[in-house]
Image 1: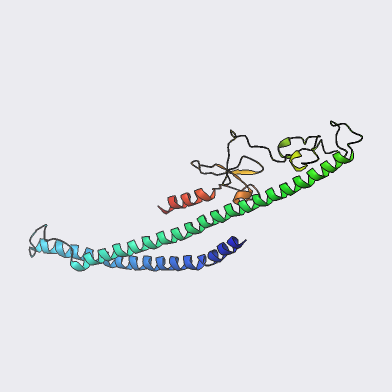
Image 2: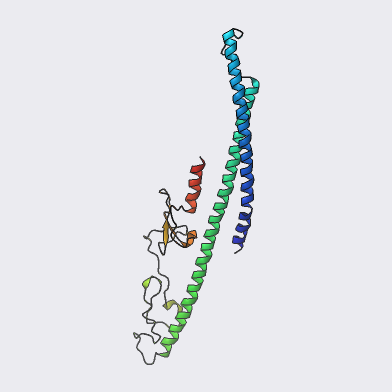
Length: 246
């Protein structure tokens, strides 16, 4: 589970990085408000001076010369620079969170792969053990039973995955293949979820109407019960955040 430890280490540093960026954005916002207030006062005063000059005749009306002072224009440019810096910092913060979300999605897929591998290994071991038991039962009862009789172990009525009955005739030289625990999936059956598997067990629907996957297995998205209120899948969470940030 080394990948889980790596993700935990990266997440532990995330709150401090977010707090730093938020503090910088607050400082930029405070600085921007101060410069804007000074610029508004300067521009208002210059407009009043121009009006008095035109009324008294000390200033000749010339649109090319009637403009704000260099100090006022420089303050306005400084406001734009602060705003651009704040936007860049907000974008950096969003990308940081989005990168961790994508990393979490990768780790969830890896965890699901490990779970499936473990289940496959367990199923194979169970099939081998069951096949050996059935073969031994058939061999022991070969002198007293016909080829079509049910083995003494009484396992002919059991069902494997998918509802297929195990066959009563079990070749003694190849016991394991006699029990088919895995049935082929219907190629026409639709698949869902991050694992791209067919529908099974408890599932939850993404509340994003444009979600490409729509339905997800509880285990694949870390749920144990039906969520309350609206729920969005890992892919659509990032999309919703981008829409809110615009």
